[in-house]
Image (spheres, rainbow, N blue to C red):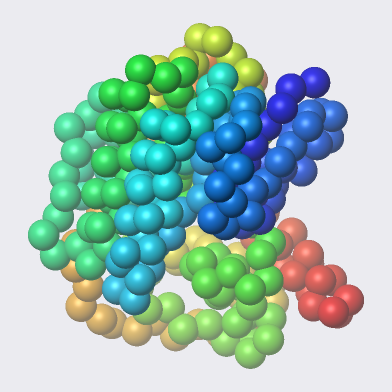
Length: 275
């Protein structure tokens, strides 16, 4: 049994990590915000999945959550290993997605602050001289009733309204990875000595289009769909390379988002009925 400290452990991904760690009988601490005792005790293994993506409304909170707090922990806290949760969004509009690929920051990306703060945090980890692991998950999905994320939002609308408005092109595609898969890989990497000092993509390894997801929701809920034509900045997500994580965790078999959407609908209905 090991001691873990999970920053962001009450969030969507962090909560799943905490649950999996506790199932393994580890001692898990989730610090409250602004708890100064994080600098006065041994944190054991740190998993840092705190973060903020609202670049328009709270840009300084984005910086604080994604980079500044991490910098303080790297400099002033005691820990045996730190796993930092970054994002495969850093590959947007690029040509390659292996962990050593050159990255593009697009001028017309309204959320480029998110990418920049994640990359700053990654570089601080790599330059810190500490035992660190960097994880770049793709678009994480799961049952989260109040989540503003794409999949939970359209699933709620399909169930509650019998209709979904799609404000993206039907051919728009991304890689989707289950929250359970992200958590299990993070836990496994936190315990693997060979992972130290490296970056790992955690993804399905293939893209799924918005149209494919909409078709499953129509079939499982009977909802209707309206596709709205809108001009958006360029957002192209190349297929994510997961060779590195497979080399270290060869049994990693990502769940398929299309196979999970119908299950998500059932679980959403059950949770809503029990509220």
